Image 1: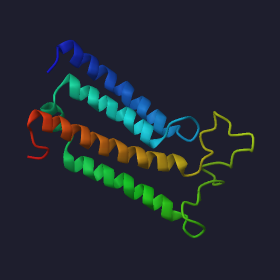
Image 2: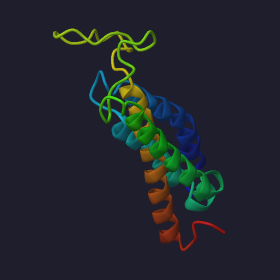
Image 3: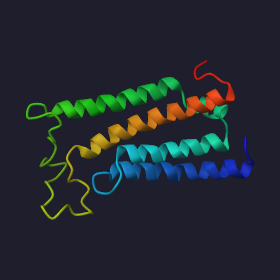
Length: 154
């Protein structure tokens, strides 16, 4: 375990890293980013906590069963959205031109300030982000526990 200064800084920075990761996921259809990139940013915050504390401390918060449920939920949301438009075609963007998700962007591109132009693509980004966060967190935690000689589940 590192010094109290490093642990305090990690506790203060984790919130900003999580918010930035969610921002990257949410704006993936407008800017470079998306579910995978935002999920990797969130997991980088978890790695920071892993370095600041240790694998045994982090294992108390991150349970394998919870990560498995999160990863499965992300996959189910992704598949459900993909099959939801199957009446037309697979992955049909059925939420475009709905009252909630707005119109199709003009041929000149979307207005960068208009978040609601992508239909269900932001929802797909959130599903992928959830899957990546859970999967990469499980991998990182398992590797850290293996290096310290611990088991994942007791």
